Image (cartoon, rainbow, N blue to C red; front, top):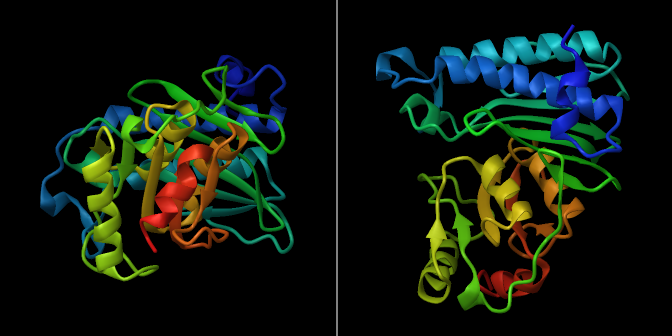
Length: 274
C-alpha cells in the first residue's frame, strides 16, 4: 500500500484522503517513469497509431498506478490509456489514468512529461492530479476545493491584453484536427504568432493545461484529447479561476477539442476560430 501521508506537502491543507492517495500514487508512478527516461530506439517502441507511440515505460508505470488504485479504491472503475489494469464497475466513479502524458517527448529522451490521474463521477471531474516527475511538481484539485501546486494555492492572474500574453498550442499531426477545418486551426495559430508575446509547444497537453492554471502560459489549446490527457488539468484550471471549453465555446467532449485560458483572454481566443 502506498502511504497517502507522503503526499500532504503536495496538496492543499484541506485535501481529502482520496486526493492525497491519488497524489501519492501519481508520484510513485512518476518515480518509475523518471528511472526509465532515455532515448528509445524506434525498434523499442510500439506504434499504436500514426505518430502515437508506446514504450515499455508506459506499460510499467500504468501497471504500478492501476494496481495501486485497485488496492486503494476497490469499488471504483479504472480506465487506463494503455489498458494495463482496466476494470468495469457499473455506476461507480471512474479513475482515468495516463501513465506518461507526452510519450513522444519521453521516448526521445526529452524530460518533460506527466503522470495524470483523474477521478470522474456521474460525468463530472471531481478530483485529479497532474504530476511532473522531473520537477517533482504536483498540480492537484478537488471540485470546490481549489487548485494547488505543491501545496501553494493557484489563482488565475489577469492578462491585460493579448499582446501581454504567452500562449501554448499544439502543432497537430496529420489527421488530429477534427473539431474545426484545418485552415481554421492554422489561422488561429498564425493569429497568436502575430499578436502575442510568444507561442510555446511543450509536448504534454496535461502539463501545458496545468501551466495555464499556474500562470506560466495564459492559454493552451489542442484537438483530439481524451479525458486521460486533460481531465485533472481541466479541473485545476477551473478551480484556479480559469475557463475551459472547446474551440467554439461549448462544453468539452471526450475525446475532443480543449481550450483552457485566463478569463480575460478566453473570448479573444475563441474569435480566432470563427
